[in-house]
Figure (spheres, rainbow, N blue to C red):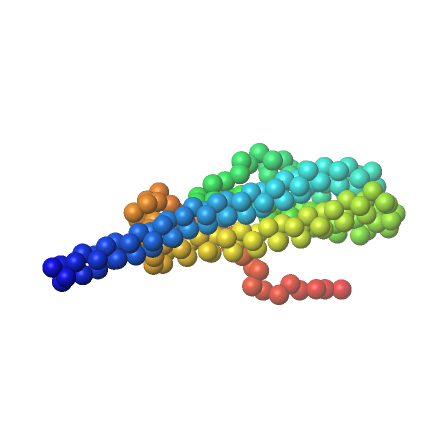
Length: 197
């Protein structure tokens, strides 16, 4: 009888350990998914902040640099394209890539606009322009931080989905869980920029 009781206690102990393991791991994937989604929302929030600042920056520069209409038109058009896009599902790599391309285009147009502003000393000294430029630089930094945080959250989430025990938990409890797309380096980012005077 005591051997039978020991076997039953052993089986119950194993079942209890499995139960504790399941309950301690079952919420990891949803928590990490929500963290990645929150980080993605922050990236979108910062992109929206930039998009909201652009019309004010363009209007300020227009007052001083009316003959630089091409650059201003590029910024306005890039901003409009970004405004037409809906926030992509982070599990859709192609949609994320398209969204990144539109954001990259807007960033490039803004860079050209800031170069144009260097040609106008009175614009550089304008308080409104300086405020907007500072806001835009701060926004670009916030975008960088938000993207870094998103990359870290996606790395954690995707690693959990691909490794044990997360892979096992996902297979049994979260079959619809898919890895999320991450940001890719800009084409040519591996080359150092050339500065010419």
